[in-house]
Length: 388
Ligand SMILES: [Fe+2]
Image 1: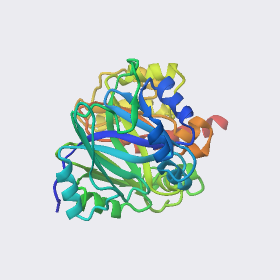
Image 2: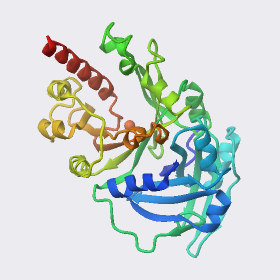
Image 3: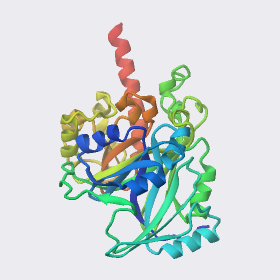
Image 4: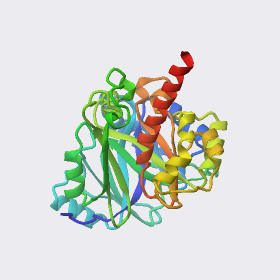
């Protein structure tokens, strides 16, 4: 049973709570070429007890918040968790309808609908709690409202930026120690529908070899929910037996001190150019072993994708991943290093970004979980025989 869409149109922004705004600003501006489009004014800083700045690349917007003193939202989030996504902002078609539907279906409101006006129009918004740990959802309807947010000061003449061609926030992936309550909530309260699911554990791909190695416990269950009207998708993971403790998903939950948003994917127009440029600028990515590419042509045949436009050598050089399920329809993706590794600071948190280029495939690269795991296994076997 589905309850129907509440009118979500897109993910407008992610609010990211950080200890050190300048550090994360350097990452977004210097490394990713996002543009700082505004920051909190003095009154908002005083009332909210946090300092904020917004960073944009085309349709992707990140709002960073750093606590100023105690008691503000960023301070309360960071008191419990390392740095991470504390609020997801959605544009909705009709704010009053969204509010009424959520109210009817048992949504828990942090605020009523608040309305703001500027010279050009109105902005209406409200927030709810979620089963995504301490991450809240905010719904917004802009009617000609040009300012970024109430209390924000726009950057007078923002640079053009975005030389890597980011387009929008493609999807969010969240991790749960048990995801069923969140899935039911997404279905019954948000009115989402299940798109697909997958489950596998390390026994599928590495019999008997994995008990002792924490990094090999990649067992997970993944369920994707979506809003069929807008196409906005939420991928959700939980650990899968028998490696609950060793599962990457459980490790995330421990590092994050609770459930939460694991990664967010930014869609790009040209991933080869973007990743080449990002690497040249010193952005670090999760490594892909060469054996992944040795097996790639055969794997693409097996999953039905067949030939792709990019040369395997270029993919190998940039360590791009490929997945898909129909002839000529695929996606290219790569994962950036998580914030804690990037900043050499566990309190920077386990959140990371993905870069994705869709060439007809609407999945999430599920095939890469397994392909990567198998590639790492082959790497280790080769190391072992080299050592002999
Ligand atoms: Fe993803």
